[in-house]
Image (cartoon, rainbow, N blue to C red; front, side, top):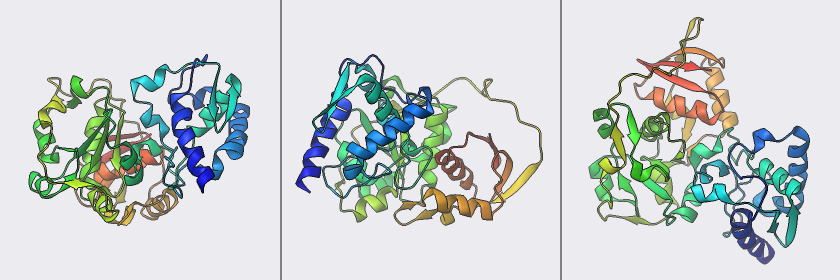
Length: 328
């Protein structure tokens, strides 16, 4: 156990902070620029030097010092992370030449996490947020009601009730928050958090994720809560754009409209979102066929949650209002 703790401490410092003088820039698109052979080489390196402590999917948290590796692209939203360069970096006492460093980091960026999502960067576990809570690059946003927030909330979070979004035309993240990583959470169903996530993500701010299991899961893990007032004003987080409509939105593709009866409760457990395999099985059972046009039946807010979950599964989603979703 001690060896994994020591390795994790070295990994936390070295894996990101000691990417010194690389002839490549660490960013979320690195994996897409590598060949299959390079990614295969990265997988071998990961299995030899990282898997013992981080697990095959990158999210093994058997040791308290371990920081999950899946969804690393979200954390690369910190502008400082994109500036590390160097001939090699050191991890667990081993120095990696440039080609190995690129291969290993590229493979790490493909890790699906314990739930197997194609886009694990869009969801953050309470465990991971607990490691990052006091990082000033993060802003935790509570989208529950003002009364719920005052009763108890994650320490340091700000309150932005989803009803506040209704008064904003095409919500956009303010300049003060443009370089921050936003983590949104609701009571735990994911419904309200998904609505806020979509508003922020579609504004062009990709550095946003939903807290898996919401406040209920955070509390169940006995993590730090507070009753102190919000330290920020919601108006400083999101602002309305005077523009209306979206001229850049892709045209509606031809094809029939399929009806999809979606029950949000069937895709969320007490501990958070179901794993990708179970989520996919449920969607298949209610008629999801992959790419196409869908009319979502059920609770009005179900559309936002479905759009978010399809994003997790790797689909490009274009909600069009009145329950219609285009999956590309």
